[in-house]
Image 1 (cartoon, helix red, strand yellow):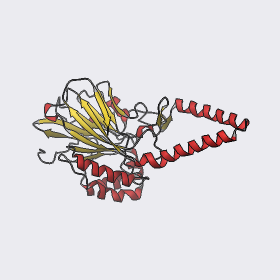
Image 2 (image 1 turned 30 degrees about the horizontal axis):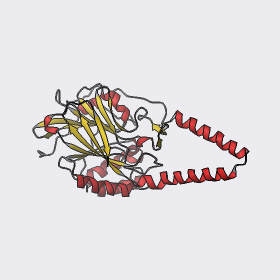
Image 3 (image 1 turned 30 degrees about the vertical axis):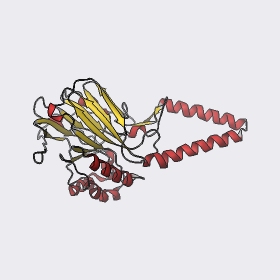
Image 4 (image 1 turned 90 degrees about the vertical axis):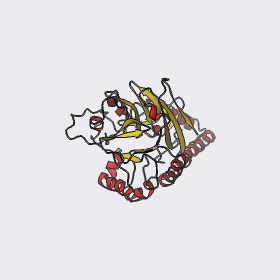
Length: 327
């Protein structure tokens, strides 16, 4: 059982950071650009041939798909169970569960309903720890509703949050105050020791990279030597900095929303800055595992990317495999 509230460590004189950089705010898939160009040429050909019936049919299909992507799929959240197998996970953490909510974007369509659903599901599933991996809000007036919702989340080892880029855009000072009112500690390049069944891991949380605040070095600076580290970092591309720290066995991220629209053969439509290389799912990246949540919000269009809440299961077994199941 939990042994009191952990002490969150903030180093006084950390070393200088390194930063990942991407030039564009959003990168649109080349495959999608080619597909849209071919589709446009096909459409022009139909117009020249005056194939009005076919044009009307295709238009109706497109409208139907867009309506589904705007109204239906964003309102159909799911639970994703992810099992992480890694020999660095201590024996005491075998079967330890982490509930992950990312990219709530409170204030966007479906966000309140999806968050209410997530709270009900997590309180039913009872994970040992709950983490909120950034982009809590997407609308300044919605910040006032955040404490009401987050106070309803309960886990034996607590609920912790990190920032995302939208939390800065909407007003980071107000977001920090809302988390304080909710009783949710915010990890800003900080970490703490989590003890479970006689074993320890270090939980490290970083600030937002988009605004130049991410400092993995600070978040792990006080971690005892050789202690396994669970990293919370909003941007998936942070995994490349994380690999400089061999004790980091897993990064939990969000940010990308799976690329919003993802179809077989075309992949994700859009990749934001700091989410260029990985958009969804669980993968081994060099030394560490990376799990990227599809996010909870109904922000923009979703197709092939339903909103999700993650249940992360830790296993100390040695098989070099990980898998995700959806139910």
